Amino acid sequence: MHKDLPNRPHCGQVTLVGAGPGDPELLTLKALKAIQAASVLLVDDLVNPEIVALAAPGARVVHVGKRGGCKSTPQHFIEKLMLTAALEGENVVRLKGGDPFLFGRGGEEVQHLQAMGVPVRVVNGITAGLAAISSLHVPLTHREAAHGVLFLTGHPAAGPHATNWALLAHTAQQERLTLVIYMGVSGVAHIQSGLLGGLPASTPVAIVQNASLPQQRQLLCSLGDMALELQQAGITSPAVIVVGEVLSLNPALALQLATQAPVAQRSGA
Image (cartoon, rainbow, N blue to C red; front, side):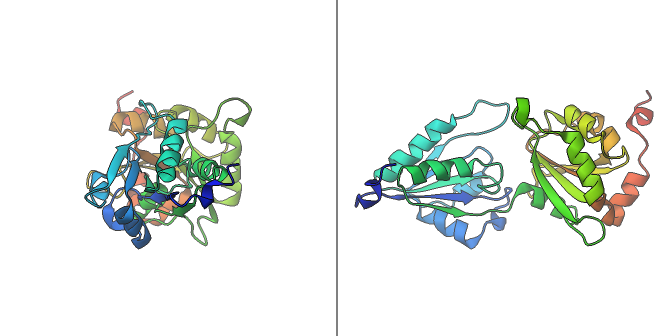
């Protein structure tokens, strides 16, 4: 650890800021103040340009895109940029979509900065999973329909740390939990297969793309039809998959789901 760094008079600070799901009006006041005060902003690919435009005119904006399946800036290089700018006395904002501490690698960045003795703060943002289901007028939890919620990544590590989707499905069924899956579009068939090992095929699913933005799209289907419905709808990332009976609390969604024929029947298969 570089114990001498905090004593350097020119050492700046880093603030990890959650930009939320996209709608600029969903920024917290604390996030807005941090963005406006920044001299350097390191911006993720999913951050709405309208939010970046809130920065001070003289601020330096560096785009460090991080998108699954796309060319991304290496994490170690982003951490080096943050450290270098802070040691030059800059007020650095690391601007992330959603919340920095929910699948945003914010924990890794805080650990790195703290190990180097650089002051770091965290400003939370509204996560896409909450914005997605709220746009459907459905809660993540409910006293009768959902006793809890699991936030999951559809891009887990391989090998011994791979996600046991069947086990999660059994737990969700027994404990009445809502599943919110991020970055799951590319692996939707694998996720569906695993979840069907513990949840009924009739379990409601909502897939929401670009939550909170004018171009938001959503798909309602059953778990048994999820992969094929997603393919036919043409929904792509960024999208959030919500699985659970809590979706039936919205009468309009429940009616839509009840009147849907299986995909195979509707496609003439």
